[in-house]
Length: 88
Image (cartoon, rainbow, N blue to C red):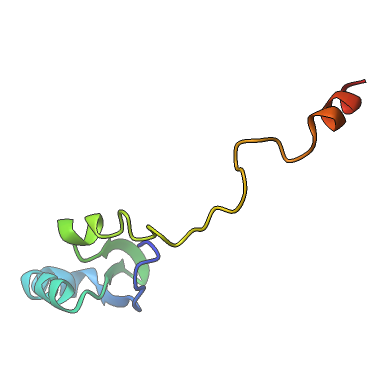
């Protein structure tokens, strides 16, 4: 899972997951809480909520207007004469 609203992962045995698969998938979708499926205590799969297309597209442009450019960002930082002096 990315940095998006990390929630604690609930663990469940694979046998219980098989018995309650549909209701568990609905719960993950509704609560947006991931589910880890284990076999003998070792993780074998993570079930994470699907991201809606609106959620994925909403970050595009979200930082627009949050950066101020100060000065010239194209010109060299140091004087051209100093660069020539460093070449020798």
